[in-house]
Amino acid sequence: MVSDAYKIIEKDEAIEVDCNMITVKPSEVNIGANPSAHGSKTLDDSAKIVNNVVESCRLHPTRFDKKSFMDHMDGYLKAVTAELEKKNPKRVAGFKKDSAALLEKICAHFDEYECFTGESQDPHGMVAVLNHREDGVTPYFTFFKDGLKAVKV
Image (cartoon, rainbow, N blue to C red):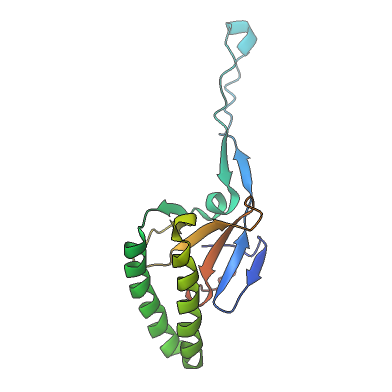
C-alpha cells in the first residue's frame, strides 16, 4: 500500500506518510509526422495534478460515511487482532489500545479525511486515510502499522 521511498513518521499505532501533489502528463506518441506540414494545431496535453502516493502505489478512492467506516474497521481490526494472536501475541493488547485511540482521532474529524483502498481493492483490507497537516497544505496518509506487511522488492 505504500513504499519506504516516502517520508514515513512512525507512531505507536500507525505510520504517517507525507505526500506531494504532482503533475502527470499522458505519454506522448510520436508517429513521425511533421505537425507543421499538415496544419495540425497544438492540442491540450491533458496534464493532471495527482497525489504522488496515490499515483505510485495505485491507491483507489473509496467512500464511507462515519458509520460504514466504523463497521468496516470493526471487521478489519478483528482480522488484524486474529493475525497478531497467531504471530505476535504480546502485541495484541497494545494494538487494541493503540488502534482504538487512532480510530477515535479519525472519527472525531472524519469529514476532514479521504479514504483509499489498495490496488486489489480488497473489501476486507486496510483503508488508508488521507488528511492534511496543520499547515493545511501538506497531505499525509495514515496507515494502521500492525496491518502492514513489509515486502522487499
